[in-house]
Image 1 (cartoon, rainbow, N blue to C red):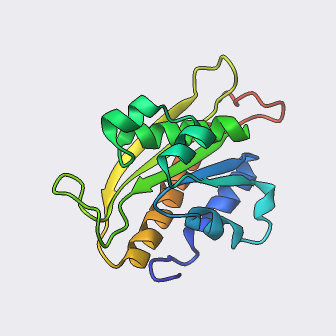
Image 2: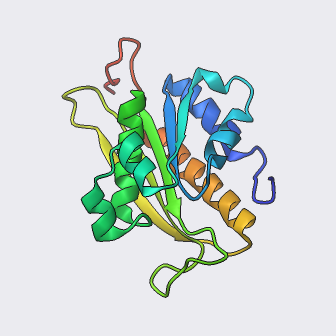
Length: 183
């Protein structure tokens, strides 16, 4: 599962960034079926920052484990920006981590539509700031990938980790007492 890996792979660079930030992470995965978590745990010492992963493949799992509302699924479908946002926020909050990342998409080879072709994915990244600090947020990006089902899943998983790495690197540093540093 290294077809789309850089050198060093994103999972190693992300691990270094999370360790440096003294931050933790949880994942909620649909179309990647646990691959994001698997890539994270390929890195020795990942228990320093990786808390847990939920594979929320069904509507019921999305509702039960990460708090996606039934109305959101009815109104937008599982492969949508609102569902990815809720999954990322939900896993972050359920796990009590600083970061949550979520994937929901269509890995194929069937299931695509003109509006959402095979390879469409929404990746959600959520950050928990200090209570009352106003810097808690969630962002979602839409991507489309080509390839076989396995190739699409790897591209999605690596993109999710890259999106999270970008966010971690942009986040303000935290001081030793948990407050953000002031420069």
